[in-house]
Length: 277
DNA sequence: AAACAGGCCTAAA
DNA sequence: TTTAGGCCTGTT
Image (tube, rainbow, N blue to C red; front, top):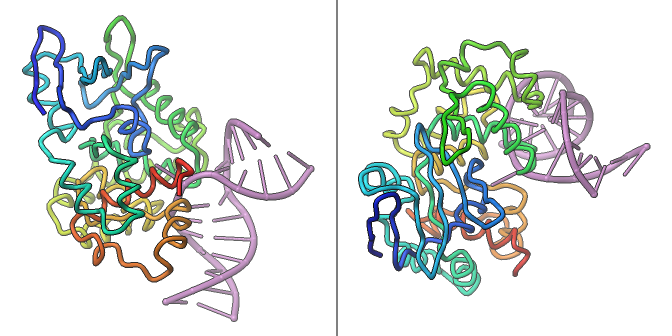
């Protein structure tokens, strides 16, 4: 992989980065494609467009922002061919990881991940995205990007000052108090995401599990997508089906995949959802 | 119309 | 420790 810097864009050659798979594999909710397949997304106070052109991935960002923000966000320093090799423990995982070639696990904002996956419970992707966008429009900060108005993800402090009734506009139902509760814990310091992300995986999972509205599955998503803890292995209904079919009931991901369990989960999940066997 | 969707909580065995 | 039912809402 190497980078070619322009004034307002960066070209990534030999990227091992497929934007469609990366944005549609279920890890994130705020990247949306326009009619030409160009994705626009927001991370913190930054926004970018991402597209593919003649075998290269392009990001609408000059060198400085690319090197300080997007390089890290897109996990571009990791060698994913080694990851795929490590998780290819058998024929099934070889197919799954090949199918998911180009997926990169994003280094997302921790609070946004907490909030997003609380919302995700017993919910479908279109609705999750709708709720999150409404939340950003209602409580985030507006800014202009490429002729469009975009919104930042609202801070925990901002949400902490609200009451559950204030979230009625989001149509997120019973998840509203979970969101407020998590925001307040972060705002008052009783839940320190930075500190959690420095702990070992099991300790972080345990702490997150104390929060109301965060169970085993959501906690695993948070440490994987928010903290880059790859021992995590979120198991939802799709994963249950895939595991039952290929590995049986008492399956221990960390003993099988070790420090690559989180990547293995993502390949398996994406493959299972595709309907391939 | 009734069930279901990328779970979690609580009550009850 | 495991299991059933309810939960907001939107979609089929």
